[in-house]
Length: 216
Image (cartoon, rainbow, N blue to C red; front, side):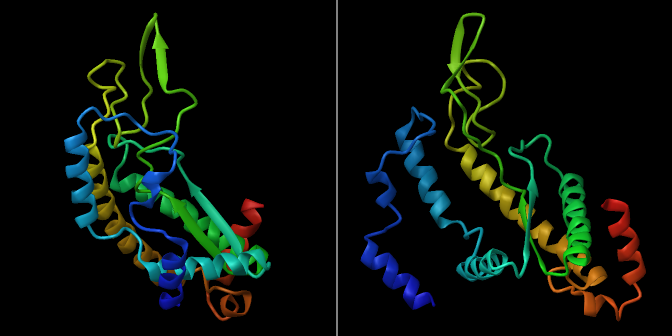
């Protein structure tokens, strides 16, 4: 499969820099181009957030959902901030998603694919490039890895270096999510694979039935 992917990339003319030949909307304006180049080099040196194997696995699971053999559950915030992000917020969202997955698995009798918009929603598109207050126009707030939310010229100036801090934070959050998932998996034996026949052999079946009824 990896060979086929590499072949497709080669024949399509794609490269890590090929996007520069196209028009990109919703992009911040960075005044320090030298710093942008330095930041790009730093980002390229960091480990990938998602592996090719994980991408291929998700594609297979999404295909199953398209065929009615699985259910896709996606949840999370449209945007996150460094200030509001914490271990407890990750745990709370993960708990809700896992509980919903258990209910949906029992009710739908199919595996549930869980996709979280979490630990990295630090940038967002805006309807306009500028925000106007009392006749003063400043660049719109585009997220903590772009600029600051405070309405001042200094805060709204895009800083490319924030991308490095953001990605480093995401890597740490990903490790935390992995640990939380392992803990929940040990309790529920992975709700992705939990089918009605499996649950019938578990002492938790009556609990799942009660949860299902209470959430319908």
